[in-house]
Image (cartoon, rainbow, N blue to C red; front, side, top):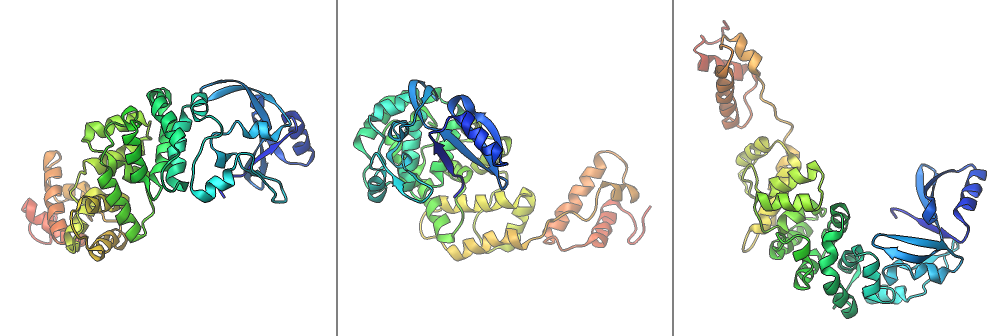
Length: 372
């Protein structure tokens, strides 16, 4: 379990007093809304006082503290998120979340339209939870509310949208739910470039066959039916980190063509030019998803293994070595170094430093075995 959220009817000030008296460090992370964080054993535990909403406005709300557990649970978005249990394990389920979970049914607590109006992000949370826990047809009332409220999605921050979509993309049935969102007019308000659900579906199948851990950036690249500019727009809309953006761009428009093959030599050359084993594996998986017809998984496995088998490669000579050979400073150094590197690559990275220096002497016209 990644985190444990704790609820109590005690006011936050009283919670802090009790924790400090027990020698537990406490941080007033959101005391105005009843939340403090206890640090115990190096792990944070959020403790929130029961609340009821007085007024809601988007992500935030004006609340009052209460001792009514049902009133607090009624603030949740989905029935399966309104579950709680006592320290001894007794389950508290005021809205039928357990029945819904067993049936693979994702429902909003109370009126779906009102829940989304309180926070539009709940629209995306509905689809994310359906992707992970839903089975069969989605709740009709929820879908209708999502369709109606979809035009409000652009009001959300890119970071919040990214968080939900990336979690959705890790689900086994992410392609089916993404396709559902397209059909309900959801994605046009978020990522109009991300419409290639067939390729996403094939990528997920390949990952599943190989036992590869799902990666949301790779899956986003697969679903993007766009060029570099479209990928840039998607990265900006989702406020991706620089690393995520660069990975996405490299997967949408690869700097080096990589395809599953038994030609280990060409694969090693592609890996060297990329200089990134993780990207190398991503490009192989995406290339496999683009493949039409039967796919030889044995070849794909061997191709991916190249990245693990190959040590970090570095040309054994550098510019200073060429200067010592008498190559004049300036463009000639770079040009000669490129010729040596091309020869070294063609030799499947086997020539050692001495061999590379010998070849450099030949390129510079120096007698064999002598330096200037």
